[in-house]
Image 1 (tube, one colour):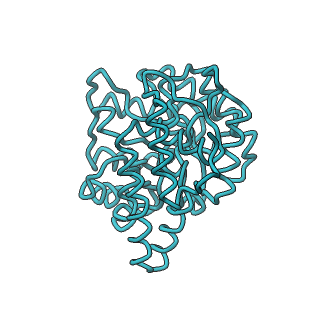
Image 2 (cartoon, one colour; image 1 turned 135 degrees about the vertical axis):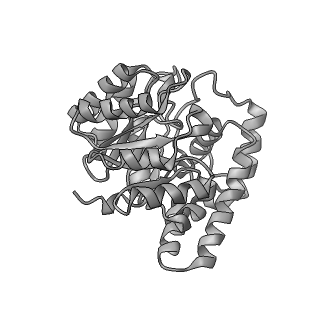
Image 3 (cartoon, helix red, strand yellow; image 1 turned 60 degrees about the vertical axis):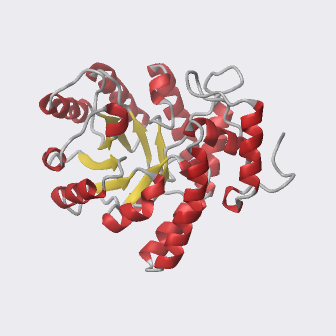
Length: 304
């Protein structure tokens, strides 16, 4: 199977809630459709941005089923199935395969300090559970699990393990992983603020959080990079990073949800204990957003 059309900008989609905090089907469909209309290459569900660890297994299944029904095969849908235990991850993997997801993804099991062999076996249990590709999710800052290039090189030899979402700013390690895993292994840049560096190092595309709120600037950055328009690519990265620098003053999920609300795409507040914005913080975000055209929020256009 060719994965050429997977090599693009893939939002790590937020999970929309209603005012009661429950999964909201219409808002979920609307956000998925909105992102498709922006020209994204795929959708990545229920990872860090999607609050997968704050949802029950049944809620995670519900979100996947809604998005698959809305997307109807227009772009690949990758669903994060990672949990702290192998049994639940396997259950979610089997559901994803039955539901029609294009691939699953998983962070390493965390909290308990597993040896590399146990983590390797965890990933092998995932691919044995169902006939569906796996994209490993490398996020050492959150999981506390740091794996080596040789570790990923061994897993890359497994046919169903097709790629890696690399969420770290260590470009030397990134280059080593790309070199060891080979040209056919999909390595996605994770940190949005480092997309240009990731592409220059050899990433095939990117899976990221702020693609929820400003996908076009990153799609244009990728296109400029591929066409050798370096100054334009650098300018796009700089513009995006001005927004990201502001985002880092808040919990990133809370900030992005507020920006989407201002863009006319309500997705609800994040689940606690994630930051709940005060009215003053929301007004500060609005004032900032109105000064940055890439967010698409003009004076007087955003909802109150």
